[in-house]
Length: 202
Length: 202
Image (cartoon, rainbow over all chains, first blue to last red; front, side):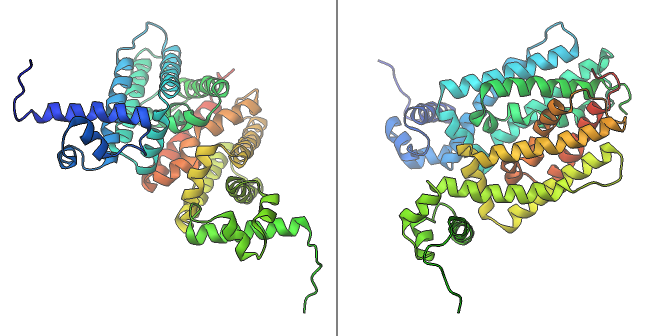
């Protein structure tokens, strides 16, 4: 039998709460799961759970943040040896498809997205800044290769991320028709690439 | 004294329901107002209200649609004698500011926006198509003037409307910081204008 220390490390407890929270949210929805339910499954006092997460939305936020890191992590290593415009198109499409898959496979993601968009949680801002960083890298590399014309890839990265909101922000993906989304995604990539390749761009 | 016909025209009744619904939603919120409340104020049976609107969300949709028509109507007449890129920037900024004003002045708009985005109502699609038409006109005119390079203003109008989602879709305006929104709006206008002015664009 496994010997348990009377006081477990805070990090482990936090991890247990995250995992149990995610399971309950997935099985019965966010609205119907309480901090007390999570505490009950873990055989803890609700007060102990609250020590780690001050509210249910703080817990939703932390779960969401793990997904964000996992999601963007997959694309940071994405480095196909193709010209910058094709690379941008590939990255955006793969990210959009990954979101669509998540939403299809985990219906509770939809609820999470609405909790997120109503409360402006830190994980939403974190996703935004990771996305902006991803575009910054793509644009900087394209400018180095002489394919993109852009003096300030940092600012361009932010604006490009904003231009893709309607295909990369989960709140849009939830309601939209997949065929229409793919067409829109291709159109936005064309528009953004035309802007970044404009030789007259200051 | 005004003589009232025993059976009023359906159009007038519909108008009364819309006006009363909007007043109640504004005063006590959408979630807390029922079709029965509206019927009570109008001294009608709920069944009679349901004859005109099959559900509360159909009523929210109809109210929203009136706002959409009013909103876009203001911009169809917008025809400043300035070059196309400046005109596009002016139109987008004025539309965004009009949305921000609505949200500030009518807190119930926020609730309406969330009802809308969760249920994908026809008025949302109507707003989208009016917006696409507005960009179609701007792009077609810019192409006629030789400032924009674009063979298919219809398709371009749809993609440009999508690119502005993060400053023209109310769900984004609700949560965002106004300073950041204005900066993003200017950046997106720059990006879209660079794309449309790209002389190499096919």
